[in-house]
Image 1 (cartoon, one colour):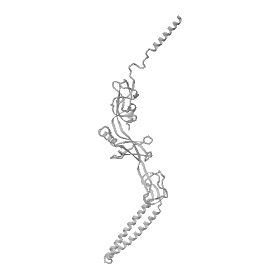
Image 2 (spheres, helix red, strand yellow; image 1 turned 90 degrees about the vertical axis):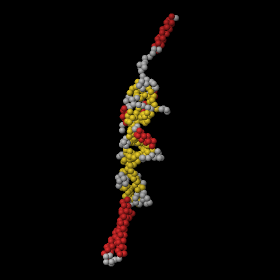
Image 3 (cartoon, helix red, strand yellow; image 1 turned 180 degrees about the vertical axis):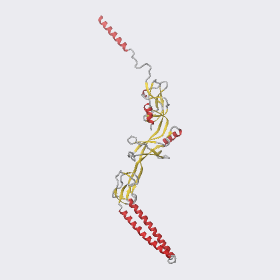
Image 4 (cartoon, helix red, strand yellow; image 1 turned 45 degrees about the vertical axis):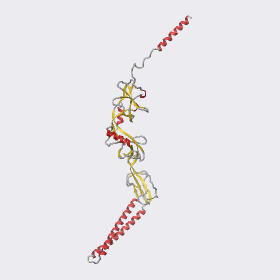
Amino acid sequence: MSRISHSTLALSALLILQLAACSKPKEAAQPAGAAPVVEVVKVQVADIPDEVELPGRVEAYRIAEVRARVSGIVAKRLYQEGQVVKAGTPLFQINPEQLQASKLEAEAELARTEANLVNANDKLQRYQALIGDQSVSQRDYRAAQAEAQLAKAEVASAQAKLNRARLDLGYANVTAPIDGVARRALVTEGALVGKDEATQLTTVEQVNPVYVNFSQSSSEVFTLRKALRDGQLKGNDGDFKIKLVLPDGSMYAQAGKLSFSDVSVNQTTDSVVMRAIFENPQQVLMPGAYVRIKIRQATNPNAILIPRDALMRDQFSTRVWVVNAKNELESREVQAGRVIDKQWVIEQGLHAGEQVVVTNVAAQTAGSKVTPKLISAQDNITKAVAP
């Protein structure tokens, strides 16, 4: 009985020691009162481009419809469809036999009228010698003068017909009117062309350079002009930098120039039509292709950029966390514009020098004490404003 009591007492003492060890407070992971570290960026003011992205369509620089200018049967097609041609390159040949016959007929008519003119002039000279002694009446003399003038007019008319016949014979060889790419043929050998009207044979398009037509809503144009007048934006002195985004999403290598901006608003679309011109030496840009235009219309001299991850959005507002002078978190409502290279353009709500939290923004609490760790966003700003 005594042995059991001693064992029970020893076990109870061991359990008491274990409970005491468990109830002892653990050592803190960090010093008491230390604020959590958050990464922040200092708000900076920078010059950034006021750039818009708009849809557009590629259009050939020049388009020439090749048409038959004389009637006849198409004898040959003299080019390969899609071939790059120079102005004057033969494209089609119309059977010239009938045109050659018309030319010979006009030459014969000219020879006949020239012979008549020689006779009329000879008669007039003889009458001039006889009119002095009244061997020829005034009436016959005037008749001889009229015959000479009529013969001269017939020669001029025959010469004009011959010139026209020569032109028609030359039109039997249909040539390219401009430099460009000759598209598919619209007629085949054996087709009768130009009987009632000038038949279109093909089209030649100049594709270096090319136009890109696009439009911007009138409200955006008015807003831009107002911002320029009020000094909120700086103009580019007419030097618009235009970039092109290809259909596959890649950037076109060469920049373009604004060549035309309409002075009125299209009443159907409520937009202002514009046109840019791009060099196209490799024929990368194809007429009719859908592309996107990035046009730098002005510069914002007082823009504020913050990293995209710093912004919080809900259905009511857009906010960021700002570390105040007491190293406490404040929730600040801001007005964000567009995104430039993963950075938001803040239009209202922030000032230069303020510190904005950029990491774990969803886990922060208003009024919390933090230790700000400053990181640099200058590299991103430099990239955003690079031309």
